[in-house]
Every structure is written in C-alpha cells, then in structure tokens.
Image 1: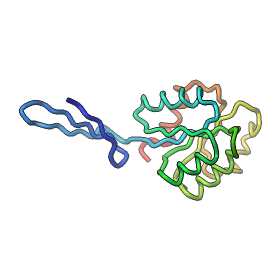
Image 2 (image 1 turned 120 degrees about the vertical axis):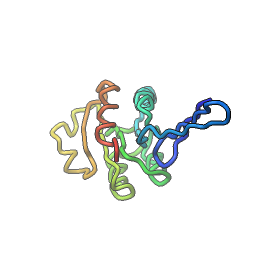
Image 3 (image 1 turned 60 degrees about the vertical axis):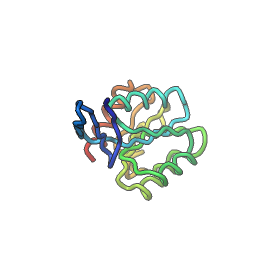
Image 4 (image 1 turned 180 degrees about the vertical axis):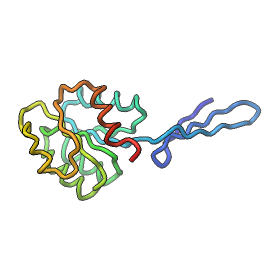
Length: 150
C-alpha cells in the first residue's frame, strides 16, 4: 500500500513494506498554484498539466473567486488570464501583491493588449506574459521555473 499526502507544501509518501515496516519518503517541494481562467476547457487543460508535475492547483473563473482563494490559501504562483468574464484581472493581481506578496503572476491573454510589455509596470508581481495559445507543457515549465523551490 502506498499513500501520498500533502503536508507543509511537500508530498509525503508512505509505503508499507511488509511485516509492519513503513517507509516514509519526502520526494520534493509541492507548488501551490492558482489559475484564474474564464474558459473552463483551457483552465482544466492547464490544471491537468500542472498536476502531472505534482502541483496543487486551484482553478477559479472570476475575480470574486480568486480573491476568496487568496484569502483562504497561500500560492507560490498565479496563472491569470487578463480577460476574465467576471471582474478585473488587474484587481486580482493588485490584491495578490497586497495579500500574498510572494506570489508571482504569469499573465496570459488572447489579445494584443499589453503586448508592449507595459503589464510589468502595472503589476509588480508579474513575472511573465504569454499568449493563451501557449502549449500547456510550456506554461507548466514556466510555472515550475518561476515558482519551483520557493
């Protein structure tokens, strides 16, 4: 029997070896990721890729849900669509910089708005700005790069 449990942002794996012997291993850091994305299909795709990298992922679709998530938990990184259907992505990023100042933000968009890089002047916790069409494995690699080991 093998059980994996998240504790203190790490996965603990408990394995029963027989005759009552138990092996406890701590394979590594567990990223805590918040995804704010109105398109459920896209959000679920990103979430699955990140979970394959052993990230703990919370997926929300609005400003209100993102603010509530930021109140409830600490996040290493936030994947934030600039164009969310309900609310303002910049308000989420601003609140995150106040409530969770160590959380970095990867902005994603399907528009050319902020394509000049000015998003970095508007959001002090911004670390990347990519298109929504970025392959999910590339986005997952960016999340791991910016949040890994924090």
